[in-house]
Image (cartoon, rainbow, N blue to C red; front, side, top):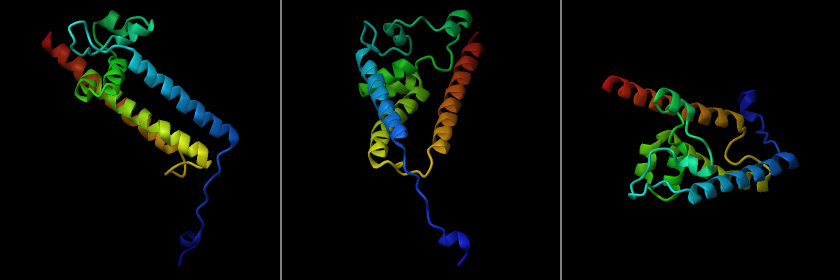
Length: 158
């Protein structure tokens, strides 16, 4: 038997501060999804929008879109969240597939943070940092690839 086979697994106990932070994250995410429920992702004709619903929150039009005529990588994410919470998965994916993935990830994060805070240990993972990094890389990667396809196809049509 090698030395590493008999080494005990050490699981760090989360401090009170970290646990309160996890609860704050869960509350913030609940507020985020409440806003997604509050905004209307459908046009006056009843068809799902693909972007622009963030303006219902008092935010301005996307500057990148306004200046270039092309959507930015995050265009449609708010709409995607709002469509997903209504169960309109196909329209959510059409609005911004990276937004759909992010929304699903954040939705799963709510119970994960609460359970981790209650247990005072990370649920299912020994360390959270590598997982956050992986999720960020995947979501940003998908957003950039999607954006490249949209801009590339729009440019080819000109």
